[in-house]
Length: 451
Image (cartoon, rainbow, N blue to C red; front, top):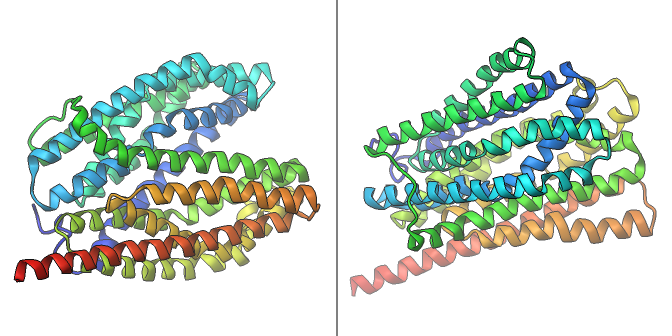
């Protein structure tokens, strides 16, 4: 284990920065990848763009169950990497790929049989749905590549390496720029070309990550089906996956309430949400770094370093917030203007960005706490908070404010802010409590050994 990868030694802050920057860059290029698909779909036709949008939503819902593979496998690998237990590391990775394989087959079966019903819920336009299905059936068949990539990326991050995954995402973006026009226009495949390009790129990415992991561990990690290993893995994977699913469903709930104010309001919120997601990329990169550092130190029971990681993460998150909150408050109209000339859409998006700026540091706290809890193998509480924050509170609060009392749109946006802040405070309190208990337990055990 090289010094660069050993996160149980050395200063915490440089580790955080070294891991977070490549992770953030990778996420940025992954976001640009998706925007590129939308751009080329718009060049095909309006129906292709609508079809891609519908297909993307359905696909995200279908693969939600596999989203937790990366963080789940990372949580399993990191402690054993710190303890240099290569046998267990290889077992976690191989069984993770086995789980991903089974999940992928399940997704194909569900997708082939029920994706059409999901599309019917999202659109009644038969032409758009036809375009959506042309994209979806290809991307569903290639979903195994997503699962393998997630497992391999999670393992590499747990080993303190975010550079390889960043390089894969950057290469994928540029590969997409080449394959999209080639397949879509030169070979005349239309929207099917966009889907095939993605399957090719994601498959190549999965193979590259698989081989890179082999170089790190000296063995190929072929799928294993050791159900004794599956149980602890699934305890980490499924809560994270379901937490992501609450985010997707929560977005639908918010859009449903905003829809009462008109299509321009929905469009303004959707565009502003994309801008906010881009601004949050450094925070997400930081949370990936936290997962690796806390995971490794959890393995050697260095709870003082875990506490220190939490402290430095919140400080760096505060710095990021100080940089991006003014952008959300003052540059909203400029940023919205890159996407539309419609004044109502710009006004709605600006209103959301200015309001949600007050919750930006709340997101920092939530992401940091979720990363810490997942790394110490306590993923259930983030799921509880996710259900509360994304589903229960938005439905109850906004039904009262918007439906019953008839308050205007700003009240909806500020309800989101208050819910995020309250959730962040609860997450921070719970995380600190769990870390304090772990530290006290370790001290008691040390005292027993001394006596």
